[in-house]
Image (tube, rainbow, N blue to C red):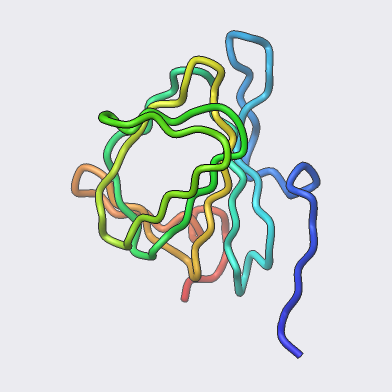
Length: 130
């Protein structure tokens, strides 16, 4: 039988320490899944107007907006929207006026590339790399 993981996103383990926004709410990232072997499902909760600069990942990813909005420059997407981004594609966004909460699903571990620099978040978290 294959792997089955069932977990409510609010019960997922926090990645690092949450930040407290100017509105007093806690923001951060959680992970659902097997951190060593995958799948890698991140629950990201970003504070209002937070900008994520253009970057890319080495794996394809699917983003599902749970609440709030993302401004992708020429388009604003909200709850229920699914966004697919092919690995190696550069993109950036800004969280909406109420912030944004979204799921980010990748089939494997992914390096993060921005401004000519490559980072491996799994190594930074002390996990083995593929």
